[in-house]
Length: 304
Image: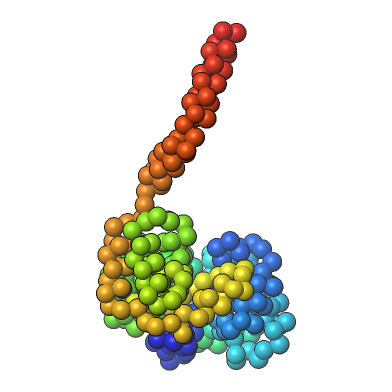
């Protein structure tokens, strides 16, 4: 399944990997990083009203010199102002006459009238497709009871450790022909190191000559889910885009990652205990003397 496009339920094409400007890039000048992503092959750029990066995305688009048709822009309504006003402000910041996808950033913002405004934006050509972000199964079911136009995309946090809890949502989206976009997929190994997923991911990486990051993205794609990722490093961007050239994961490797993820991430308390134990074993004398010093300090305090 090479990186390319997938057809949305409204007939528009959707690039299956995007460069995101949220995460640690929020509230920062990301012009150079977006430009670097475009230069390295990312055609899909993801931003949001909440990120406060739309102006810089617009500058990068302008500096790229590329025609509008060669870039795909997603942004999100994050609740500041009315939706119609918000999209106009976003378009002004981006320097565009339309975006490719406009998402409701959080389910708390949705109502029947808000979605009707989104449907009107699509009809008026301000956005080619409309969708949602961070919606649960229940949120989507509620929306579809009154929606005339189905959301084309639901962007969610998705990784091996939450796959079990998101499986029903993925199945529902598949039946409704709603594309799922994943952010935070690498958190399973970057923010939860030492967990059960690491060993099976490392084994798969060794077999296909890939990095653990690439294996995680290959696993995400095996679920029919698209990717939103980010990095300030050119090498990382190249690493992510190179996933399309790797051999596919086997069914056994995918199942092993599923099973490992179902065990859950390592507990933070467990990490703290292991760290303390490791430090104590390596420097027990230092710990002992530190404890004595603390005790002496308390004793001195109470003496005076």
